[in-house]
Length: 196
Length: 196
Image 1 (cartoon, rainbow over the protein chains, first blue to last red):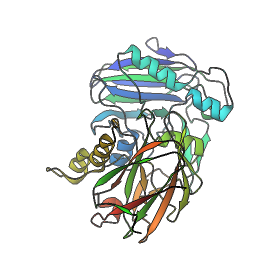
Image 2 (image 1 turned 90 degrees about the vertical axis):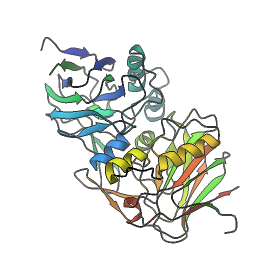
Image 3 (image 1 turned 135 degrees about the vertical axis):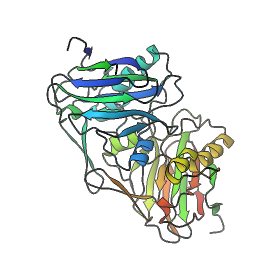
């Protein structure tokens, strides 16, 4: 556990992975959603939920599933998953979203800014930001297509491990929205990079 | 009907809408899926399924629903819809997709190329291309998240009408894939712009 790097509550972090390395994302306290976006090292390919839906023929991803780039190359494979439910539908929360949905008038921490800042620190121009894999975020799709947030299923210490299928720049954020965190204030996430 | 502009089978077309104008997209023969992407006139805002899912709290859109930009501004409102089922999950089909899923080795017409060409003719740099609204495309989401193609529900002459909420550059393609067209070869689509 000494190797964990902490993503503070409601903040973001950037990291690089070489092909073959594994990224473990941990929910230390449980019940916290995170946003993950991935770019190829040169910034020209980005994570694509649409391609992943197409090639996987499903909207929920878990162990064994591949996350594809918008150029139809495998970026990440989920090699283990103690939670089993993640959302890949919702855009990262943004300042505009807090204004529209929460009536905020002041600045509010948001995943879009946190992810973009982390990527720019890695030398990646992030915009337009792709839809993140919302790790641990629990969104149900009703038969009529209605989307309903449920609390994340992650318990304290649960994790998901993703293997890099190409050299990657990654940003990870602890989502500051309450709706996707069971109504609770945001909590930290953590990660470690495992050389395999 | 004399005002219809035809999008030939498996091809694409570009058009501009001023705020308040309405775009009617028609399936003249029935059973044909189309891909629609929208950019703000200056090319800086693009259609966003993730924002639309978030603000609408559903994955299926029909009459009365707003399609949002990635900057959280309304782009289009669906003002009428004779079909009632459209997909907003799948990326536009691409050359790589035909190689991976169909084993094609030669060039194959694809919506990504058709949409990008149409947008470039309008002076819009389309990449990275956002997920299109796949008009008339009928994708079911099973309870476990599996995605299943069904034939489009559109009958000959059915249409959907979208009102521009800002000045827009739009590309529309008749999808050449058989899987989303009930196994049939592609057919034309048509559109008309209605000044209101």
